[in-house]
Image (tube, rainbow, N blue to C red):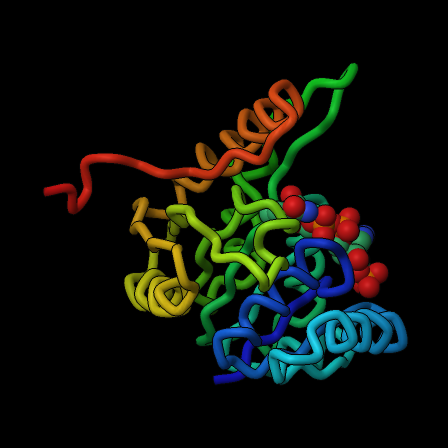
Amino acid sequence: MEIGILGGTGPAGRAIAARLASVGFEVILGSRNRYRAMEACDGLLEKWPDHGLAIRSGDNASAAAAPVVVIATPWDAAAATARSVADHLDGKVVVCMSNAIARVAGEFQPLVPPRGSVAASVQAEIPDAFVAAAFHHVPATELGNLSHEIVSDILICSDHEAATETVSEIVSRFPGSRPLDAGGLSNAMAIEAFTAVLLQLNSRYQTRVAVGLTGIGDS
Ligand SMILES: NC(=O)c1ccc[n+]([C@@H]2O[C@H](COP(=O)([O-])OP(=O)(O)OC[C@H]3O[C@@H](n4cnc5c(N)ncnc54)[C@H](OP(=O)(O)O)[C@@H]3O)[C@@H](O)[C@H]2O)c1
């Protein structure tokens, strides 16, 4: 299956592109500028020559033509970016990984975007797409490091069962990761905001924390 990344040239977009390609997806890494996308794509292929990554570059519209699309832009650009390619997104699963977070006086703090979460703002712009919120709390450094598994629960929110299922199937392919259905899109607000807490912990303890919930499937 082909997966397109909007805003694929940043750390998050490059990381998810590499990880998806490493487990067999064909990836179209998109950008507002196709030359930037080409550079990012070449960088990934050079970095991981032994993984046979099927990643190609394009503009955001080419990426949006894929059957599943990930939005990896800054939070305040996510809804507008979805709107800019809305014609391509009807009836598709669109995964939003953007967090509305600011760093104020050295501390990470959550912001409240319109409709409570970035994912909900995106869904409002593309009502005929099936938006899911996921991957918010996985640092790009972990997501994009193909030498290591991502040992983490991945929380997924959507108002569309099919979207949650699709993202769960994708995550199930990542060694070490467990997809968890965390409810409807209204819960994306909590997950996006909680990411500020995780970033703060990383900063305070000079580490990279991962989400691992107990009590589900424990024997
Ligand atoms: N970095 C992480 O570890 C991480 C992990 C999980 C989730 N996230 C979330 O993922 C999102 C992206 O993170 P990032 O660190 O990769 O961000 P970023 O580098 O600031 O931005 C990603 C890409 O978005 C595009 N972009 C920037 N401004 C834009 C605008 N005004 N309109 C449209 N596109 C724009 C740019 O691509 P072009 O200029 O090539 O179009 C840029 O390379 C954030 O919301 C973040 O919270 C990040």
